[in-house]
Length: 228
Image (tube, rainbow, N blue to C red):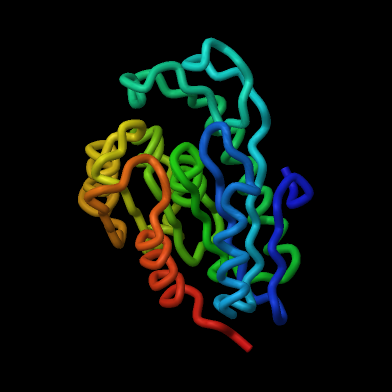
């Protein structure tokens, strides 16, 4: 996968940073590009290119096999940890690592690259970020969970063990249960020892929230100070 299969919001000044953000199941990169366009209108992160890749259309088992844009197959919501599509996840991880490498080849420092995503896209962002061979600036996961936990514990890279993580979750999420997000936070910050900023929203379901985006923006300002 290259940035040709993505929505790209270009920087307002010389690029020194990149934020790659992955959409959820059934969506596409356009669904999240308005966040970056809003940043651009308010002159936030002017030196950052925002990349919103489009997932390929694949058969989704819980949708009776009909195709939809997805980063991997989901066979059962109740079996989210016991029936994981590991091959599909790893294909998507390799694609995202390819986009990261493409940005590094353009001259962007890997430590100025942020990887994030929502729901299914957030799961891939966590998996790809924690196993990336380059030191990333940070990882964002919204309304998501940590997939392939035993594999992550084995294959996570030493170079990203101190990479900060921003996790946010709605407490009324009926799709990616709040308990899954909370458990993922506990594994990441406790068992695996990552620095995790954890934000929760009492009335939020499986969607984004203006306060959530504002909290992410504050976190990004700490991680990506503008470089002129």
